[in-house]
Amino acid sequence: MTSSTSTQILERHALAEKTAREAGAVAFDYFQKRESLVIETKADPQDVVSIADRDVENIIRERVLSAFPEDGFLGEEYGLAAGSSGYTWVVDPIDGTSPFVNGMPNWCVSIAVLHEQKPVVGVIHVPCADELYSAAEGQGARLNGVALSIAAHKTIRNTPTGIGANHHVSPEVVGKIISDLMESGGNFLRLGSGALMLAYVAAGRLVGYYEPYMHAWDCLGGYCIVQEAGGWHLPFPVEGERLTKGAPVLAAGPGAVEDIKRIAGLTSKDVAAA
Image (cartoon, rainbow, N blue to C red):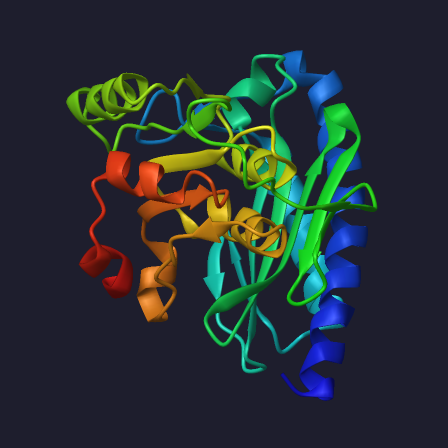
């Protein structure tokens, strides 16, 4: 990485942190008055959206394109606007909208920046817990300014594994994942926010996370944070239109990688092809 590239990444990292906090404050205000929100459903009755999601995404988009007008931007609510700088922001304004509208605290604002087809910035803000998970390539990962380092002794047998599920995956597939995990001596947790569970992997609260189908805006910020905290993640396909499509998401600490790959049914060929 050149010094110029490093500076460009750090500039975007600083903006991502600042914007995530601002967006999180706006989202939290909506959360406190959620009873007045008009809730819409998408393809899945449990996949919901509100004016809060759209307003928060617009705030992030405006801040980013004001500072870096040549950057690309992909948001969950308004899609992809291509850029010319080589950098693309990937944003979920409120990951965990179902917990959000139902009054649960396990939701977050997730921001990632891609460069050369990999996440080089990841910021996840959890307003209800006042937590900011943050990482930039080569700079390590931090939670509220404190360095994160995933402990190698944690395995699926002594630390919970996060599992995600949605209408893209059959109940039988989800059931087998959970069965295989528990038969291997593990246990699982599902919060309703994949981005937050990836942040928990980086913080050592979960030993890994697996979801058979997930979108880039849900995972790329968390992937960067996990990587910088010393964990492993399955690469997400980001070339061209693949960035807007779903794919398997898998991340783990060093003591759980092989177990979680096995439970996910991934071979070395699958990992190499990702």
